[in-house]
Amino acid sequence: MSDKYAVFGNPIAHSLSPLIHTFFANTLNEDIEYGRVLVEDGGFVKAAEAFKASGGKGFNVTAPCKIDAFNFVDKLSDAAKTAGAVNTVKFTSDGVLGDNTDGVGFISDLKRLQVKLEGADVLLIGAGGAAQGILYPLVKSEAAKITVVNRTASKALSLAQKVNSDKVEAKGFDSLCGDFSIIINASSSSLFKELPPLDDSFIKKAEFVYDLAYTKEGSTVFTQKAQSLGVSSAFDGLGMLIMQAAASYEIWRGVCPDVEATITYMRSVLSSR
Ligand code: NDP
Image: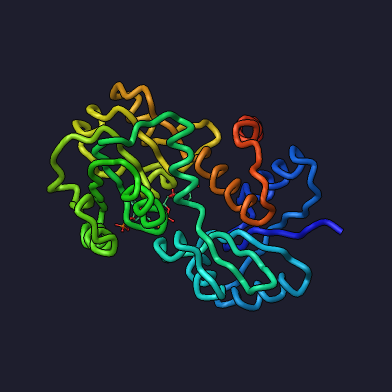
């Protein structure tokens, strides 16, 4: 019988995780089954226990269940503790382990894209779950300074306070100043085809722009805007999605999938839709 995994969330029909993990397994000659679990409001624990009872080995977690998963597991990794959220659950004989691979997925994708974090002034847009997940890895990286800016400025402040690092400061868009060589859009603005209220002058000076959102075209309204302002290195978040999935796969199965082949495969799947 195949080892059983899934992604939990609501909505879940759009999730690319089954395609990604099935491709990982096929290229590694491993036999897994990976499905989707729609979690009804308040139904996370019941769904997780039913999945375990049916022989599930582990599962991924997406919105809005990452905090439910955080509260469900017996043991948390350091990454899950700092992110305050769990996106990877593993059932073991020692109990239920909770991890968070968003941060490592993000940093791995920047490495793949050969972004130099060393000494960089980074602007991080957004203060939701995704921004929290990547802020700690950014603080631990060689970046010199990280400025968190958010539409609701008070949320940027709370996020920066949680990290408690000299490298981090919080701003509202109105009070933003300075030059940023790297701009990361971790807000969900692109999902609504909107742009964050960031003055063009900041974008023009950036060397690298990254949007965590991803599209079948491989660009978002934000990366398109950056390109129109002359930023040649502007990328969407498909690489991060695949990198975080690969890190989950490795946690479950101890082997690292071929991420480059998966990115090529997923780009072709998305563009044919
Ligand atoms: P949340 O709902 O937790 O947070 C949303 C954030 O976006 C808030 O800071 C919100 O600001 C801000 N925001 C929303 N709309 C706008 C807008 N029009 N202009 C400016 N700011 C806006 O979402 P997540 O943090 O979970 O997700 C954020 C993004 O990251 C999404 O695009 C998601 O798809 C992507 N993501 C990608 C991953 C990947 O692997 N590539 C992994 C995880 C997430 P406010 O506080 O003012 O409401």
